[in-house]
Length: 207
Length: 383
Image (tube, rainbow over all chains, first blue to last red):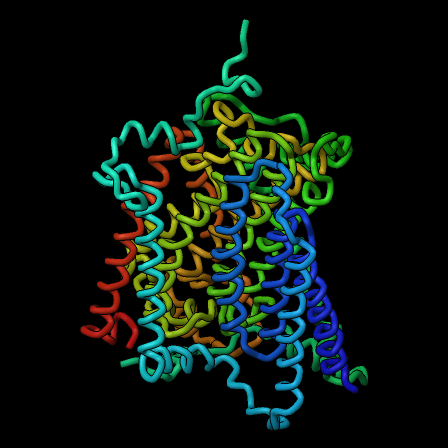
């Protein structure tokens, strides 16, 4: 075994173990902030695996999109609403956990079965290396043009949806209830920043 | 249509290649090429790491001296000649300070935050070229790697803001993340215009595309708008003063750094200065011809009747390249420092407006114009 291949093996073992342990922790940890930060670690180890497969462009794109955009947005969402309070207990929690665990185990079994029965071509195709960027560009603008454009339309739709949800005050009727909306009232009722002071948490300290 | 050949035209000489010389020399001692390469690998990394830290020391000294000049003071003058040892004293002071973790803070995330801020910045030095072969690794994705790595930083900022258990820290962390996300997009679009012109993401190819006619072939003449956008965004990414909202002292005490002391604070400090030097280096690589001398070195060598491949000429061109890169970068650092001490801070809404409503559309238009010019004048704008 040469130096290069043993380094590769060590990297693979480290990356895959962080990947598996990290994703288990993302699902199982009770603290949602830890889960979100660990998700970034999981995405980074996936990028490392891409790097091991000689797909450096895909690895960099993975870091940029998943770590830099998706994960930061998740963290934003958690930190803007995080109140450090325990979740309300849901009835039948044990049954729910059991069911979702069974579904996940079934999926895992299916994937393992597929991985072991598929006739993988060994060794795989020769890595394209640095020309991969050009190949990806060509595919995106020829045979994968339609999925690419559809994905962008999907993103546009979610963006418009977010704007509609965030800026209800610009519409004359409420989008969800259909009632005529008085802008001032909506601002006061719905915006968490303008909540009325309550007895337990007064906004202004009494002299 | 897309041309699929990577153009590496105008490649007069390969220049100094220390790696192959090193491997050859060790091969002479009876070592295999694989082992020699393994021995070579840590050397440039160590050199660049030391260079980055020394760059920070120089930067701190410059900041102190230039701010003093802007405020009609003298600045540090007792520690060494002209106060040159002052940054060392600063660093030593931070090293010996007590390392405090606030009582209700999250110790693990509190420690990990500054590390996550610093590591991507240092990793990005991988792609900074000081000469044709004078860089750690000429990776194919080059400049894209830097953009991807710099997008990890906001996570570190959010982490330290959250873990400090302090309202100001959390707000500072959120602001820092919002700022870096919104300025990353125009930055990437400005880089994309350059990449389109040089047909490659590799920093070495980007510089090579700017050689040939000396100062006239630098990208700043072909991408003046892109240059301004990139510089503004780079300053915003470094959180330098016109955009240092995350640590605006009047509003947020010190933002996400409020609770930090000692070496952990120093990591933030180091990170922001290394990032400033890195951004300046990348501006010089992308827009100011990288290691290129204002007059083509090959032409000068020809004038003196020397071959470009002669060892002595190679050594001199290599040295000139390193000096030019650092000189250009520090000129930009000087401008950044001057800006910091002369320009007032913008408000957070103005900052986000500038990013999303001004820089982003301009960057898109710049990209479109570059594409049109590339199609119209392929000889000037890279076919």
